[in-house]
Length: 496
Image (cartoon, rainbow, N blue to C red; front, side, top):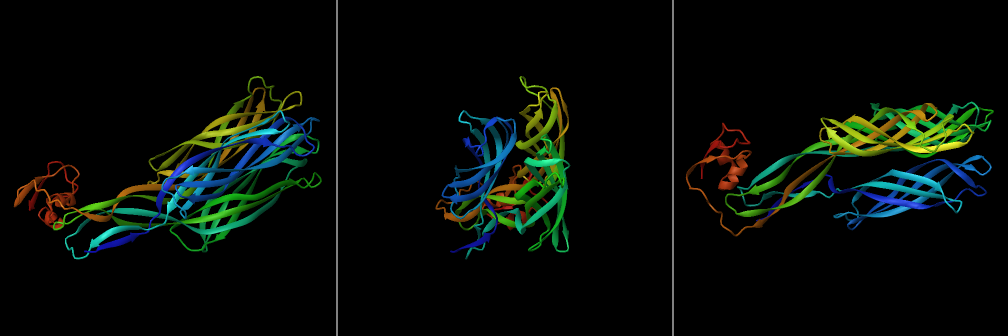
C-alpha cells in the first residue's frame, strides 16, 4: 500500500505573543546647555529588525525622544536623543527562515533631571510578535489499492493578505504661522480616511495633522495646530477582491521659515502599503477509517492564521484634566501631547471595542511666568466594525489633543484619535497526516445482521459507519430521510 497526499497552502500560525522590554539610561544635554527644569517630552519607537532563530526571536529597535527644557538663564530649548534597544523572546516552535512580524508600542515614558546634570530616561516598550510559516500542510488523501477508505473532511475558509503596493511619497506643504520664530517640538499624525479603487490603482486620501510647541518672535511659547489634506494614487501590482491601506510616517521635519515669511514648512515621507485580500476554501481531512483495514489515524494539530482585512477610523474624546496638588494654577494653557495605549480589546457581534488610556502631557504658564508641566491619563473607548471571523487585531493608534480652554485648576482638552486596525482570525484543527497499523481486531459489541441503532446527540453518518465498520454509503442509503447531525435517541436502520 502507498499513502496518497494532498498539499494545502495555508498560512500556519507558529507563535503569537508580546515581549516587554525596559530602557533606562542617561540622556546628555546639548553641548553648552544646562537644564533647570524639564518642560515637555514625547517619544516614538520602531522595530528595526526581528530575526527568527531556533525557538526564539531576536528583536532590535530604537526610541527617539524629543525634549523641551528650560535653561538656567530662563531660555527654552529643545533637543532630540535616540537610544537603541534589543531583546530576545522565547518562542517555542520557531525556526530560522519563518516569517516574522513585530510592532513596537510605547507603554510608559518618563524623563527627569538627574544629579549629574543629565536627564534620566525610563521607558517600557511592548513588542507584539507574530510568526507564521508558509510550509504547506501535507495531509492524507487516499491509500492506493484500498477502495473503501472513508475520509471525513471539514471546510476551511482561508484569507491571505497580499501586498499590492509599497511606495514612499514625499508630502510637503508650507502653512501659515503668524509670528512663529522657532518650532521647539512637534508631532505629526497621519489619518487615512478612504481607500478607493480608481483606474487600476488605489486612491488613498486622508489628513496629515500637525501639533507643535513653538516660540514666537516675542519669546512666547505657543501651540500651533494645523491640518494638511492629501490624496495620492498608488499604482497596484495585481488585483484583489478588496483592498485597504496602511500608512506610516518615515523621515519628516517641521521648521519655521522665519517671522518675515510667517510660514512653517512641513515635509514628510509617507510609506503607503496597499494590501489586497484573497479568500478561498479547502477541505481538510480530520478523520479516516476503512471497513476492511484496521488502522489508527495520525493527527497533527494545525493552527491556521487568516487575514480578515483592515479598516481605519477617527474618533473624538473630550475630557478635563486637573492640576496636581502642589502645582500653581494655570494662567495660560500652552501645549498638550498624548500617547494612546490600548489596555483591552473585545470582539462581539461584528464589532471591536478597544479600551485604553491617553497618556497626556500638559504644558502651561503660571501667573509668575514660569513654565509648568504635568502628566495625566485620560481613559477612552472606541468601537469599530470588525469581520465576523476576527479573533484579534493589530492596532496602530495616534492621538492629537487640542486645548479648548484652561484656567485655574482645570484644562479642557479635545482629543482626535486615529485608529488603523488589521484583523486576523485563528482556526485550530487536527488534520490526518498519516496512518499507523493497528494489529488489534475490531471489537464488535453488537449483533451482526440488521441493527436498529439509537443515535447520540450530534452524531453523523460517518460516526455510525466508523463504529460499525461499514461503508458510509451503506449507513446513509438506508436512512435517507434522516438529517445529520442526529438528535439524541433518533433511530437508524443498519445492515452490519
